[in-house]
Image (cartoon, rainbow, N blue to C red):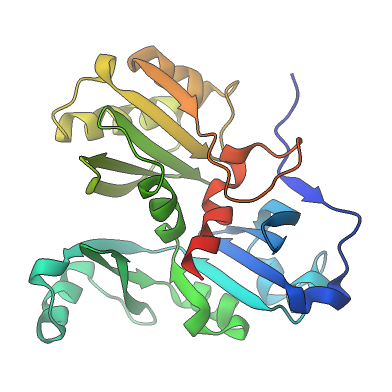
Length: 265
């Protein structure tokens, strides 16, 4: 079987022309993905790279240091919580921050996630140091683009959406076009992934055999994780959402959460 491809480069890429390119960076705890886009086309992508490449560039030093038209960085959160717009006020932000149990060195951000919710999240000091050269003002909540992409795809009421990044899985659910659930879990085996997916459906009072799972990120149909999910749910599929013009060798679901950062610019 063919191994999934997590790298692509267009021979026409010219970093001397980076002033017309957008650099997208999406960080995980120990790795990051990057994409370079021109207009609406992908010209380079690296799906899984060690986080040390950001602080001590080697293999892609020239790419990371080019002068881009725009840089958008998706940050991984140590923890996050959603605050409904209806109850949010600047005066009570600190009350919500207490729920995050912020530790020394961690930085707290708050951002608009959609028209009805803000997201409050904390980020580790190591991550902040890794992206400092790109400017904190160019950062967003790491899942924000993915959430916006799903929201704009007319999400179905019988579907939970899952995004896998490293050993983390995030689940998203919409009902009547409104965000009803967003949460992230750590998993290390196919059974753990299926357990959390079943847990989410239970919380939503849904039945796995009547529920579809639409999945994206670091997973392929031949993976044990995918097959295990298919044992429990009515249907499991990878997303076909395309936010950039992609070459045939790049599968849309592998790059979705990175490409979706274009919606945050």
